[in-house]
Image 1 (tube, rainbow, N blue to C red):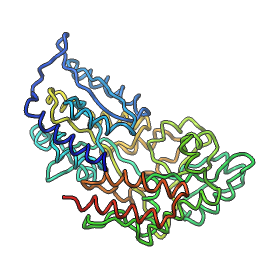
Image 2 (tube, rainbow, N blue to C red):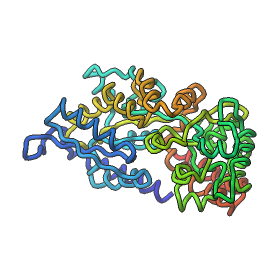
Image 3 (tube, helix red, strand yellow):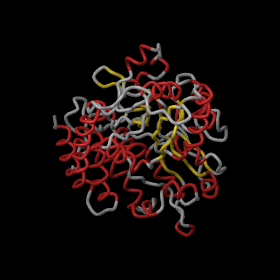
Length: 415
């Protein structure tokens, strides 16, 4: 709650500073170049970002781009502080959970008119992603990429245990059965990593079990529904049965590290892990197992422009380039993320031929968009604070979802 109040205050304070902000390209550096800043959070994408910036500079040599990498855990907190001081990056990453807050607070610029003026086509991106970043009829973010969920697995561990690799026939029962066979306590190997994460985690399980996260009318959450409770219990059962590292273990050492080092045989994760996993010959990925139905989360990041930028024209030129086919092809060939620009996904699938990247594209067919309402960020924080008590077995699922539902519904009821 405190964090949410800080966010509201930040938006108010940020509004006070907008009136005095210039929309010109004044403040050039001594060599006559305009310098803009680009804020993002994923260090795995640094090589691709650096290559894209070099290509941009060939086209626009008079615009310097200074990159600002901030870990995701601190990213939005840093933006809140920067907004208060009028020091936001000129261009920055935005996710669906926060776009409505930043748009309604006038912290980021609407881009629809700029796109129309420059004949910049929004039809080059999946409509679902454009819709995700549309607030009150105006587009605030140009899609950069999108992601679904896959079941990553270690072929070496499977081979040693004599277990067939996962495929599209797998369901929840098969996942649990395989996890039991793959778990080897003598070697310190767990069959599955039961992450406490919503995307690529318990959201997928809830949807697969016929449940929902936020109701269609946006007035309530479904965490306390039978379908969600059953899904959460299944997710945590891997820990209870010793088939997954504990929450404490996965906090002490990241689950991705345990997986890449051969201590976890299987785990749900996204295509953003391709740069980290692609050089490990033991790893591959399959489609996620199904429950009562198939379902995976889909989300995508966008690039937005700070409302108080002093270099609006330069920032818009950079956003257009970041969203171009040329930039998308850089992401595609490096296997970094699935580019949002239509027609470049095939190149991404072929970027790492040793991995079954088609699993992530197949997931689009039965994907469910991550919830995006004004209070999404607040609800996510409640999920983290409350569900960790269930994951650490300090509290029952029933008690945890009761508390979570109460807090989340209160957040949704706010005007």
